[in-house]
Image (cartoon, rainbow, N blue to C red; front, side, top):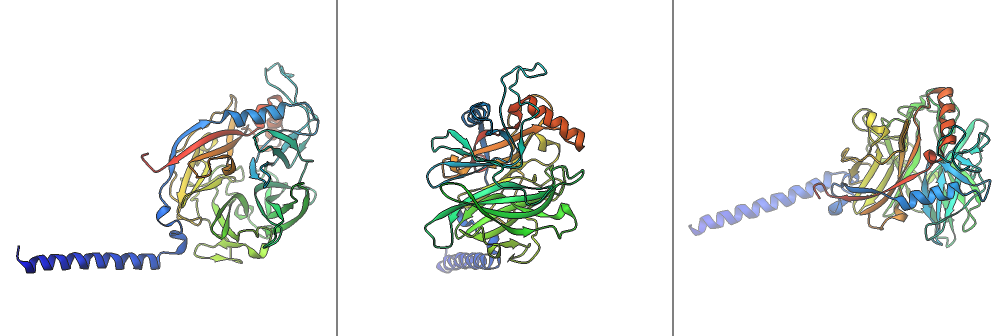
Amino acid sequence: MPDDARTGRRNGTGLGILLALVSAAVLLTVLPDHDREGGATCGARTLTSWAANTRLTGEFARYGDDGTRADDWTGGDGSHSVRLPDGRVLWLFSDTYLGLVHAPPNPVGESYAWRDASTPLVRNSAVVMSRDGRLLTTLPAPVFPDPAPLQWRWPVAARVEPRSPGSDRRVVRVLLWTRTAGQAPWIYGVPSATEVATLSLPGLRLEGITTVLDQRTVTDPSRRVLFGTAAVDAGAWTYVFGGDDGRAAARPASQAYVARVPRGRLGEPGAWEYWDGSAWTARGRPAPVLGDGRRTGVGSAFTVVRDGGTYVLFTMAAGAAGLTTITSYWACAPAGPWHGPTRGFSPSLPGGDVAAYNPQAHPELGDGDGDRIVLSYDVNWLDTTGAAGAAGAAANLSRNVSLYRPRFVTLRLGRPGT
């Protein structure tokens, strides 16, 4: 080959490389920060395996059936957790049964442990677990008092933070959903506000509650957004995820939203910023980052974990499968774009007309690198339509105490095809 031809090929190759580098630079320049946050460490993540975690499921059954005290936890949903500085784990629950559990057979002759009709039901509770995984005690319940008649508070995600920026003293910040009693289809209450409570350490005493985002001025309750179903720390920020009640009965056709707060400042309403579809803003209306109301969407409670540079969201699947199947989405940044749904799985359910809901990840119980994720899910009686249905569901939960307790699975994630 003539030298000038070889020179031309070399020059062409060099020009191609130069153009590729320029194109990449332009792409990185115009690509919004929220689309490339994960960088080279971000990539698709999908479920590779899952297995029932019988140890954790059994521990909650043991504690719930223990008749030593008449004012402790026997069942609840919500199932959020946070590890405390001394190694204990604080478990937070929404609607909770207290009292005693009786050995089978129950009054209708079935071989299930049962609660009697006078069993107290409180709107929230907290249970303390030792560093070695044994449930120890129930805090006086409810931990977070009702803000007003016919209103209540459900605790969601929690973080340990400095009492004030730069302080050596730490406290627990607990995100709360305030809901107001409503008529069907709002049988789980009308969304009202997102709040942040402060608990002392190590005593876990309630010190105060601050409103972060009041939604009562939003006329359509289905468009009200409550934040705190998940919180993920990344860099200088804590990203707080939330959802609307696109379907009041909590079927997975709702939309997901995200806010961010400088780490350590969850209790400062003025520090919160919300993704409005194009930028982070302190005053704009939050815009959804996931959910088209049909093929994609989230339940009113879902969870998000960070695996390297990839964010993975677990929720009940859209449509009829949402009663039995947990699926996932992934993104390189909290604001998306989110990809999926990816491979799902159907955790074990007891017999009867029951449904799974509220999958929640517990990173403090995993292996710390995102490869092994401990996930809980709640189980409830399915027919809760209207007052009669709700009363029937409560009766079934009393007859079989195992229905209203968290169950656990251990998941492993990998790249597609692994």
